Amino acid sequence: MSYAEYRKKILGFIEDHEKWRKSTINMIASENVTSPTVTRAVASGFMHKYAEGWPRARYYQGCKYVDEVELLGVELFTKLFKSDFADLRPISGTNANQAAFFGLTNAGDKAIVLHTSHGGHISHMPFGAAGMRGLEVHTWPFDNEEFNIDVDKAEKMIRELEPKIVVFGGSLFPFPHPVKELAPVAKEVGAYVMYDAAHVLGLIAGGQFQDPLREGADIITASTHKTFPGPQGGVIIYKRFGETEEIARLQWAIFPGVLSNHHLHHMAGKALTAAEMLEYGEAYAKQIVKNAKALAEALAEEGFKVIGEDKGYTESHQVIVDVSDLHEAAGGWAAPLLEEAGIILNKNLLPWDPLEKVEKPSGLRIGVQEVTRVGMKEDEMKEIARFIKRVLIDREDPKKVEKDVFYFRRNYTRVYYSFDYGLPE
Ligand SMILES: Cc1ncc(COP(=O)(O)O)c(C=O)c1O
Image (tube, rainbow, N blue to C red; front, side, top):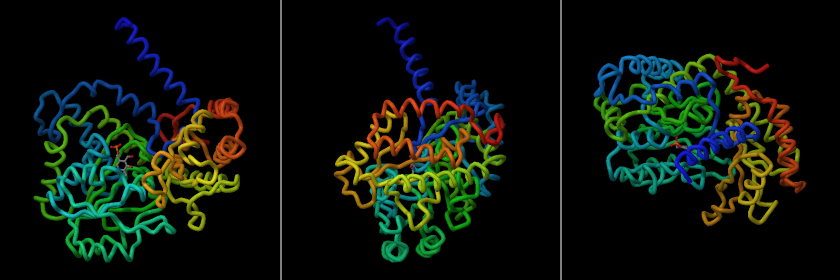
């Protein structure tokens, strides 16, 4: 194959992907779509620039416009999250977590985090960023019934272990974590309270779910592309905590600790997304939660075992379904079958699954943040529940369902809650 043919192939796959995404119902809980404005920023000349360090104190020349954008971005994020400071430099959620662990702890310190099998993220674990930092990682006691951290046992654990840092937040995250209950206990033993808002940053921005900084968290780390509908990236947000040196140490951990240049096109996209969220974030976050609840109810009505019935199913963008009764391979069977029907979502371990079930976990994790952003509301959630039922319960040919999904999906071509298209009707 000639190199020109490689070019053609690669560009072709990109186009195919874009066309396919617009004809499927994407419910991966960690993804979203950017507005035309934000997409423009990410495809801008900022992508060709270097700007190590802080605006107006760079290690690179040629940053005068980049500096202005970054300062506006910091101002917008600080306002949006009512924080004292925001750092837009981390290039991903994991990178933000790395910086937090390096900036706030020393090797050998103890950390308490949510175990991945309870919905925690790999970057919190011994084999992820926390372990790479050399932390002694302990995991929160978890209450399967409540689908949440067990507050009484956790309180005892904090007092016994006296950790240097406690970490809230996770990837499977339907209900707010008990930050206001446990942050004071962590403070008593001198621990930092970190909240990983990778999944729920957009909900927090819109005043839904929970308000970690007011509930006692020192620092929020997050991705900027899940419920916060920006380009892929990370952010660290905090109120003034500790001594000036502690804050300087955190900033030093970000640069030059875990990154050099900070992908300025994405930085600009994050800044613009913060402006979108200040304008439309409340409406967006409210509709996400309404849609998640509507989808959960509709799925339960269609005969699915949806997690959290007695707690209103969910308070976030996520709906969690136990499909272990439907097939021996459970989520390992359901997710690929749904993809054939044009419904894209992930299989997921549930807290009671043994780790060996990772390929055939009991659960499906469904996120409604992207379908909400393209303008769908409660009625559409009922329609989506019916599509899922046709594939998984009625065992209809997924290719037949895919056709109906295609005709349904093509009505949603705009990215709402944006300056480009405003609110959906
Ligand atoms: C809780 C949590 N933290 C961190 C991350 C990592 O984010 P990123 O992919 O931006 O590195 C994720 C990713 O899904 C996550 O769920």
